Length: 428
Ligand code: ACO
Image (cartoon, rainbow, N blue to C red):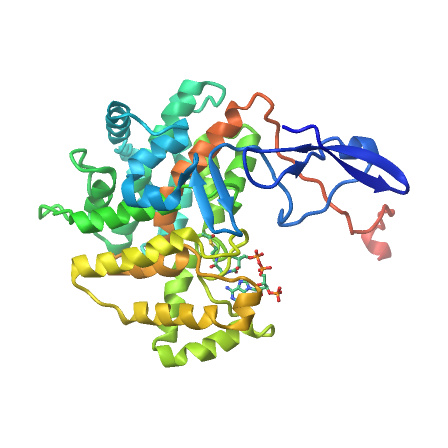
């Protein structure tokens, strides 16, 4: 923290506002006492210039295209680490020793099963329900099953509920998929890795032994790492805001899932592949680029642009490489990848995208890989939610552990009618 001050002048009167410094990134002007001193609020819908909290988890430099978890670059983690290790890192702040990683992985594997009565929840959904609708419902319902871990003031309760959430998400997600296609639910197999087990529960059937392909398992694990956390994005901020009232972690995660579903956030991976399929062949790309530039047309290039990144999203770099690895391992080709590559090339040489600094984001290539692995588009955002659960849980824990934590309660610029007298209906 620095002793710097920012000066605000209101009607000729000067107010000193403290300036706080993080370990890296922009300083922040501390306006917590502004209302008390001046009677004014700040106005920042969409939080374009507002830091909503202090956090030591994830750092993004959007101008340079940098993403660090606890200081480690995302590219290094995706290429050299595992989702379990990154989960440990996000939750605990340091990379685990081999022994710590073994213990953590074992603990998570001991929480993978769902309560039998929770499995019956699925029957209440229509078969054609979007799996994200099922995820919102089932994850929210976890709070009705685990009363022994919902005292948020108890660090041990927080630890157990965090482990439960990370462990049960693959089971819940795979069951949402199985339900939609009318196949029996598969039980977790703890001899498999976290990601291998998820693939087994999703694509396996009871009648046959499911063989986890190492290349697919590795690609899927990488995708989970790339989605694990992303500082104060919309869904994470939703989890923090819900948690700030003291709500239990399962309810908070359901709130995060609901927010993630939107096409401007996690839902973009589903929308991006649908867009690429609709474009179809590279010769049709210019038409869609023109549509994206047309202010009278609501169409946007899905998987392009980002609130924070004004450079190439470092996760998209890894994704693009992973597409090739998966195609090679599965010996498949999908013309949609050629369309995506050409679209990126044309957009990045177009003045509109250059001036607005619009680059491919994490969602642009992820759908191509997930589709090659065999997931329907409706499952894409579910996979995002599965992986982001660790980020949500870590951010929620960080917030609750802070003794200075208070309920999040934004204010507003009121533009409605001023006080007026009620008129009885007969006189209107
Ligand atoms: N296609 C065409 N134009 C775009 C796009 C796009 N994908 N994204 C932004 N723009 C334009 C806007 O029209 C706007 O133009 P203007 O200044 O002339 O009005 C300008 O770029 C800035 O866009 P905003 O929407 O104001 O930027 P914001 O930071 O609020 O939005 C967002 C970021 C929502 C991600 C946006 O880029 C978008 O809608 N992208 C497509 C959806 C998508 O891929 N979302 C995934 C984000 S990553 C994630 O959540 C995991």
